[in-house]
Image (tube, rainbow, N blue to C red):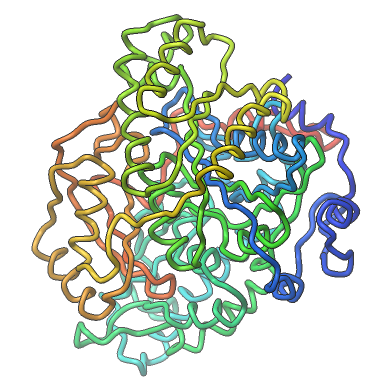
Length: 557
């Protein structure tokens, strides 16, 4: 059966009952969205502050390929398996974006028998969080142009407005636009553009905020542009925008509770991409889960060079989180792709290609253990095309690295198929819990922080940028010496060339543009040709999605 067919057959428990039975959350602390979705109140989360924290497990992956790796599926399967072996476990996932749902990637609710449900709701509008983020972002954009139209008392330079607009859809035609055309009544004509919602600073702020007061303060700190002198920033608070923006986000900031196919509670909240944003679920959700469970399994977007690095250097640093271990997801198929095979050849045994592609996995393992200084368990996400010889080779190479490796079959068997993985994680955590390290010191100049990520994590020889970018980084280093960096780079390679597979070394990471996310508290460095508004593929998934006269959806994956 397809993922959506499996999800549709799920026997769900009303989420209010499930949260009370499994986590002890009182019904009056939850706001239900129908029978199977609910938001948890911030007051209740604050009441948990004195409870001890559980163990935090990060699930990440090798560099993504068209063959798929199954990071979300593994997160769900591991969470279900931990509950099966008697551990009180919660999973914390990110919300899917509509862009990839209707583009090439599909949804983000897991797959097979390791899914979160209701799958259709989660992958589509869910509880409206992304819509609220998009509206809050675009309210600020409207207030900027309205301010300029009505005399511009702040003396904001229309040529130096840095705040774009957003929409939660892949639409390359909106990357660069002109607004205010049609005469004076329509405002001041200027260049503008769109990003996808998950690249919005408002999304990053929601994911890093610790509560409503912090959310509002961060929104007020957003820099929307600069005055005519070219130096003085104009903030959202100068436009009196942050109060209305926070009002639009008053429900979006509350974590969402759903369930797995095995009726275990899952929290899904926030959803920035890890290739153009920091790629983690919300701090509020993770902190709440750590108070409610003994084990919390969370994911970070794309490969460990992006999502895991930002999880450590941005989220853990800002929120004071302490991960205990990392699960690195790999598939035989994906490693053969990194070894040079095309997608149509991946179902046939090819040990030389696997041998070559293993360089990608080995680089990620070294990064996790040497630079993040965390224990690592490799999860082989099983496919029916995997051969005994291929799995044996993979095991041999992992054992040579001194890292635990487990074959997991959660896609086909649910939590039962991930029992060995759960046992390996528990043994690792109980015997040697991690004490994570950061890739760079926070006091280092921004240029050096970017260089540290590029050389240590990506294997690059160095970084390059034009004089304008370097000067901007120098100015921001003086103004914001304690800001981490958020790298925007292709997820498909350690380099900035999406077509370069394996574990390249000696390349140069070219920094094309830098952006200050002052409310979020970091600097975005855009590398190579990375776009913050994706485009649709030649045959987008939207062409296959349909709904019948009874409201049953098909084609969603």
